[in-house]
Length: 160
Picture (cartoon, rainbow, N blue to C red):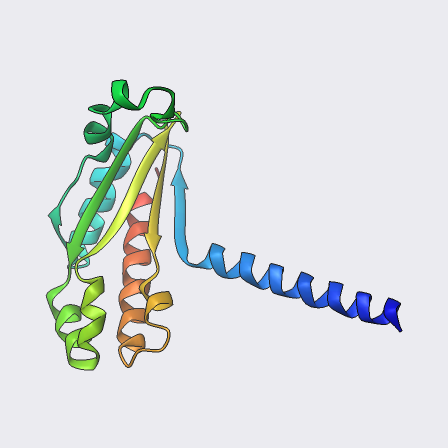
């Protein structure tokens, strides 16, 4: 009986761990191009704006972090990233739709993506709004927003 119980417990733990790993991976959309930031950034920017997601703020995060290099010493940029940037953007029609369905989901507005470059390769990361909105009346709208943003990222990175 103990052997069956241990086998059952092991199977249950394995299933829980695998489910958590899968969930963590699906929270972030990630795409990498074999191109530097100065090629990827303007291409993704233009693609987002073509999809009517207008960029309202462009933090150059690595420039800001560089000011702390001396203070942080060995803890500064341990991943040796060449560049870190972000785009903050909004689509007015979607913002209105979200506010009509669930005003609390305006916590997602404006949306953002992060970009980082390492050794000439640039990665775009995007937190999927559908994960946060899983139990929201605005889920359908945010799934559409998410799909449009991912399509814009793919289009912008196409051929890079």
